[in-house]
Image 1 (cartoon, helix red, strand yellow):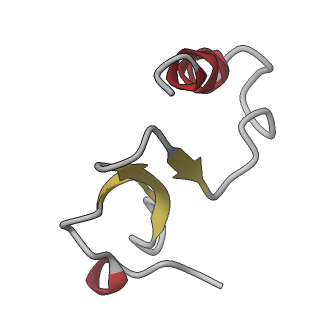
Image 2 (spheres, rainbow, N blue to C red):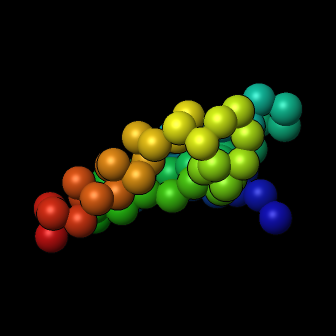
Length: 65
Protein backbone atom coordinates (compact mmCIF):
# COMPACT_ATOMS: atom_id res chain seq x y z
CA UNK A 1 0.00 0.00 0.00
CA UNK A 2 1.02 3.61 -0.30
CA UNK A 3 -0.03 6.93 1.16
CA UNK A 4 -0.69 9.46 -1.56
CA UNK A 5 -0.11 13.16 -1.05
CA UNK A 6 -3.77 13.86 -1.84
CA UNK A 7 -5.01 11.60 0.95
CA UNK A 8 -3.26 13.52 3.75
CA UNK A 9 -5.43 15.80 5.86
CA UNK A 10 -3.01 18.72 6.09
CA UNK A 11 -4.84 20.08 9.13
CA UNK A 12 -3.70 16.99 11.06
CA UNK A 13 -0.43 15.91 9.46
CA UNK A 14 2.38 17.05 7.20
CA UNK A 15 4.29 14.97 4.72
CA UNK A 16 7.74 14.36 6.18
CA UNK A 17 9.50 11.82 3.92
CA UNK A 18 8.87 11.24 0.21
CA UNK A 19 9.90 8.27 -1.91
CA UNK A 20 12.10 9.62 -4.71
CA UNK A 21 11.03 6.86 -7.10
CA UNK A 22 7.24 7.18 -7.08
CA UNK A 23 6.67 10.31 -4.93
CA UNK A 24 4.52 8.44 -2.41
CA UNK A 25 4.59 9.53 1.19
CA UNK A 26 7.04 7.62 3.38
CA UNK A 27 6.57 9.61 6.56
CA UNK A 28 4.09 11.84 8.34
CA UNK A 29 4.54 14.46 11.05
CA UNK A 30 1.39 14.82 13.13
CA UNK A 31 0.57 18.37 14.16
CA UNK A 32 -1.83 17.90 17.08
CA UNK A 33 -0.17 15.00 18.84
CA UNK A 34 3.46 14.15 19.62
CA UNK A 35 3.61 11.44 16.97
CA UNK A 36 5.25 10.75 13.63
CA UNK A 37 5.46 7.83 11.26
CA UNK A 38 7.83 6.40 8.71
CA UNK A 39 6.96 3.85 6.08
CA UNK A 40 10.38 2.36 5.66
CA UNK A 41 12.61 0.34 7.91
CA UNK A 42 14.89 2.89 9.59
CA UNK A 43 17.88 0.53 9.61
CA UNK A 44 17.38 -1.18 6.24
CA UNK A 45 19.90 0.58 4.06
CA UNK A 46 23.05 2.62 4.10
CA UNK A 47 24.17 1.87 7.61
CA UNK A 48 22.77 1.30 11.07
CA UNK A 49 23.39 4.89 12.18
CA UNK A 50 21.80 6.74 9.24
CA UNK A 51 18.42 7.12 10.89
CA UNK A 52 19.41 7.23 14.55
CA UNK A 53 17.76 10.64 14.70
CA UNK A 54 14.36 8.93 14.36
CA UNK A 55 14.92 6.91 17.50
CA UNK A 56 16.23 9.96 19.36
CA UNK A 57 13.21 11.97 18.26
CA UNK A 58 10.85 9.19 19.33
CA UNK A 59 12.33 9.16 22.83
CA UNK A 60 12.21 12.97 22.99
CA UNK A 61 8.54 13.03 21.95
CA UNK A 62 7.68 10.49 24.65
CA UNK A 63 8.74 13.07 27.20
CA UNK A 64 6.28 15.63 25.79
CA UNK A 65 3.24 13.70 27.06
